Image (cartoon, rainbow, N blue to C red; front, side):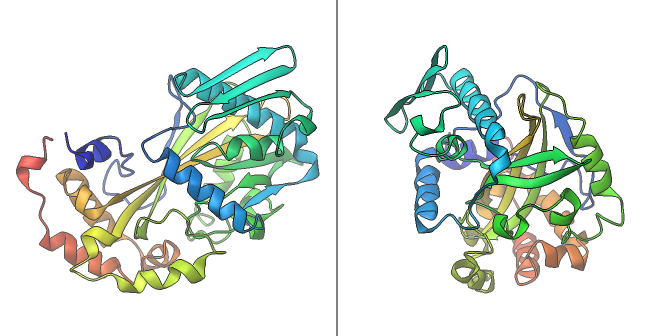
Length: 321
């Protein structure tokens, strides 16, 4: 089986039908890991490290009252990784003395749980540097959810620094149509009822030019110009469907909500291996309202993508691969 076929068989395709509008799109997480460790692990960990070395402003955030949530996140993440990927991660606990081993990074540390001085970084930063997911921690208080901690090196056109401390509906302010439809009021009500030990998941999508995970507002000068470089000749290689697998996890001590966000990219050339997906994407893009086209950053190349899709029919023999 080719690498392309392997990639597409593991890709979380976001469209259950041809609809472009907002839907519930939330399912319980049952018998599966909260965090993914795939073939891009080392590349993405190195990229996260490179970005954080350039400066943590807008990339890493923890407000002082989120200390308990930091330790919560570390405990949940270590246990999840050690449970689902035991060949790569192990966690040994002897009272409050814990030993964490990450064989992928040739790392082993023994520390005292709840004693920050025994780790090389804050607990949340320490463990989040070892996963591919961006992670947001929302504090729940005053009948609302607040953006009070997070690590964000692979975002789709937003800024953790700008959203610092905002309420749930405030940091979702730019999303068109959803507020008028009451989507975020319903979403917040649902999230505030998420229970410990009962995580949920949803998919979100956009498109990205080139295989670039970091499309943050902070790095716009590096990638913004790339949207204007798409042509019929290079479209299949340059344009990628970008899908976020988002988890919603209640943390036990702090009652905060943890949102791991794993971003997957697949080129249009690879997408041709699944004809039904290719046709569904084409219908979604055709029907996408202009305000959503603008919001998702597709204005400069949506028409080129549609022209390319119409000219590149999937080959029938690949459909069953």
